[in-house]
Structure formats: structure tokens, C-alpha cells
Length: 345
Length: 273
Image (cartoon, rainbow over all chains, first blue to last red; front, side):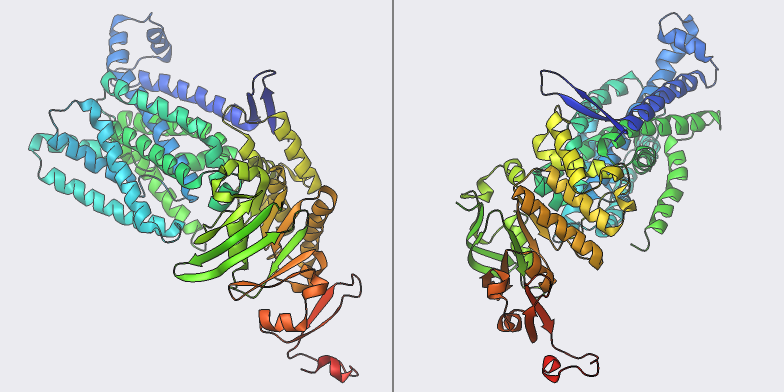
């Protein structure tokens, strides 16, 4: 019990029970994210020292450095952090919800659903403002999630059936995306394919303003929903027993997961396995209590994307490899390992 | 008024009725045990009392009002259920599990009131888990693990606790340990305990009130020493037996007939079928 400390307000009904380990792990990871972000911002075709980057951030940098950092490098870093956090939280929610460590929006086809509607949006609604793209991918993600539940439902949802049907749906969605691209004009094809591999190449401040409100709202909602995820992790019967409105909250959480996925996909495309890896790493660090997983996974997700993108950008220069290639390279073997570990259950 | 009762309750899975048109009252402040053969619907009945299963027709009444009319958090402050062999997420500590019992009293601003702390510490103490509070639930023995789940329902601070086969998969020592704990909770704090048990002899020993579920309804109910007969066992369990008296507790004891090794010198009539 020394693992926790409590904070209580004397007059208002406000109180917190804080897991000490979670607190310092979160602070350390936040610091690490900041450091990596600064170093990464400085690296590229023209190297800028971290100190110079900090100067630019404080508004006292040189003219050329300021231009490079603010216009070209920083949007990509910020988008990387936002997308990583969104994917990590989406995965954490989904794993708590379906009580399955194999669950992740990309593995279950939810990301695929987002891609289908996003590509369709780019194709058929060219005249509409790009700021509706997250909305479009949210709709696709939600439709696939609902379809997944409907197909997997047979007096409840067993984890294995969910994964099997999810894998099936994922194949269907990628076929649909291929079909859409085949029939699209040449100019769009290149853009769509690059986007699909999962890339934050060439993002701008417009992308940041497009996704940040969604992500901030959804993260706040996730914090509010923490207690509900915690009891849902104990199974629907226990959740009912302690007074959780299971079906309603289940649906709300699923929507939050698809909204986070949709937002991330709208800018980053299909960046695979971050949503699977980040919650796992977080649980290893601080245990499965959702409040802990939430606060830690935000930074784990951000760090994975930042580091993968840094390697993708710098190691093969002048080639700029899509970040999704690297997350898959780490994530796919890990997924196989998880399947292998669970083979007897 | 009785705390928990059913009113013309019919439960079904698909088209098949499991329980039909049942009126029953759970005696408040007592230990009630549901017995019956596999698949007779005793667990189904218990689950419906706890609103885990919606009735086809009829209703479960809590303090005189249909349970479906209550806000679910209000029900959770009055009644807790522990399902059969629940599973905690890997790595969740005992404290983190027991805390979840406070869910009906919490919101996202009020996450750990003094009352929460008092109830959780009390639940840990009465299940003798205070020392193990920071251990992961999955690292505990079967008996300790079951105590942790019971501690969670205690933290919920309800007058009524329902348990679906709380002793399954436990060895004899731990079965007795769990049942003793529940007996104490009833004895010292007057909590109403309702549970499904498979072991008829333990049911007779711990229950004030036994409900024999059979043929979509209740075959008999009452004090074990008044209702447990060879006829009842024959009808409810389709098994012949001899009912004697437990030499230590004086409660009814069921010795099943059947095959088995006979020790030389045994009186013949005691093992004849």
C-alpha cells in the first residue's frame, strides 16, 4: 500500500489515489519524449544542434534555423507525437474493452475501415475541405468496429473469434482500398499509396490543427472514462455487479477507440502495430490498471513514432522511408510472439 | 419487507424455459444456499437475482421495487455478485482489484475518499489480505485469489452478497476457509449471503436456508434439517443415498449409494442399495 499516495481536497469532493510508480515512469517518459523530439528536430539534411533547436523554440534562434525548424521539421514531430499518442490510447482502450492482449485497431481491421473511407473521401469528395478527412476515417473505423462486433457476437464475444473475424475484415478492407486506388486518377494513386504505408512525410501545421482538437478532447474523455475501463477489464458480470452500465459504456469506449484511430489514420495513414505495442510496453512498466496504462502509453506511443520516424528519415537519407515500415518491422514479430505465447489458452 | 424476492419470475435461454413462474423470498440476514443437479437452473436463478440475466417475464424485487427500475449504481450499493471463477487482468494487484468494489461510490473527481480507503482497508483486513495487498492477483494461490475477489465485494459495502459456486476448484482446506469467512460475515455483520454450492454436506452445514431447485422451480426450501431427506435427494439429484447426522455439527449428511470398496466387518445394511 506504500505503492500509492492519496490527495484529497478538504472541502470539495475531489480526491485522487496516485500510483507512485506510474507517476515517475510517466514523468521520465515525458522528459524522454521531449529530449527525443528536440534531438530529432535538429537532425536531417542540415543538422542543427539541440541547443539551437531550443533557442528557436524560445524564439531567439537564427533566421535560417527558425525557418527549417518551424516550417519543415516541427510539424512532423508534433504530428508524430499526436498520432503516436492517439494510436497508443486507442489500443489501450480496445485491449481493456475486449480483454484481449491481441486486440489492436490495425489488427482487427478498424484502421483498414478508416483507410477505405479516407481514400474514398479523397477520391469522391475532392471539393470538400480536407479538414473533414478525420470525420470520414472515423466513420469507416466505426462501421468496421460495429460490423466486427455484430459478426463476432454469439452470446458475448470471445477474444479468439474477435481476432479471427477482425483479421478477415482487415483483408476485406485492404482489398477495397486496392480497388479504390486502381480506379483512381494517377496523381492521386501515388499520394494514396504513400499515405497508406503509414507516413508523416510532408505534414504541415494544417495537419496539426486538423487533428489536435480531436485528440485533446478524446484524451480528456479517456481520463474521465478510466474507472469504467478498469471495471470492464474485470469482465462484464463484475462490471454489472459494481454498477457499471456495461453495454452503453462498451459502445462509448468503442466509439472513442474508433475516433482516435480515425484521427490518427487521417494524417498518418496505416501506421501498424503502435496500438498493439504501446499498451503492452506500458503494462510491463506499470501494470494493467487503466489509469496507469493510459498515462504511460501516451508517451510510449509518441516515443515509438518519433524514434521510428527518426530512423526512417535519417538512416537512409536522402531516401525518406515511411515510418509505418519500421513500426511493422518491430511490431509484426512481436505479434507472432504474442500468438505463440497464447497458443495454449 | 424482505430485501430480495421474485415475482412470477420466468427465465429462459432462447425458447427453453429454465425457471417458470417462480415466487420466492430470500430471507434477509441469513445464509441461503441453492442446490440442485447440473443444469437445473440454480446458477441462472442466482444470476437473475443479481440482474446479470433479464427475466423473460416477471420480476426480481429489491426492497419491494423491481430491480430493473433501480439505477444500477444504487443496486450496486445494496447487492454484490461474485460470478464463478472470475479472471483478473495479468499483473493487477490485490489492492487494485479490491478498489474496484468502490466503483458505485466514485466519480472521476472523487476517486479515493476517506470512506473508500476505510472500506478497502477493512475488506483487506477481514479477508486477511492486508500483507498481500501489493501482490499481483495472478501470483496468489487459489484460496487467496478467491478471498481477494470476496474482498472486492466487501469493499462494495452491500448488505447482500451473492456468490456462484465460490468454492469451485479449491481444495478442501480452502473450501472450508472461504465458507468460514462467509459464515463470519453473516454472523458478525448480519449480511445476507446467497450462494450456489455443489457440495450438499457443506451446504447443510453452513446454510440457514436451503433452496432445492428442480424442474423449472423450487422443489423444497427451508432449514436443511427439515427438508433434506432421501426422497429429496432422489428427486432432485436422481441419486439414492442415506441421510445421517453429521457427528460434529448435527446437520444432515448425505452418503451416496453406489459402488465402492467395502471394509471387512462393515454392517451389511449400511452399504446395501
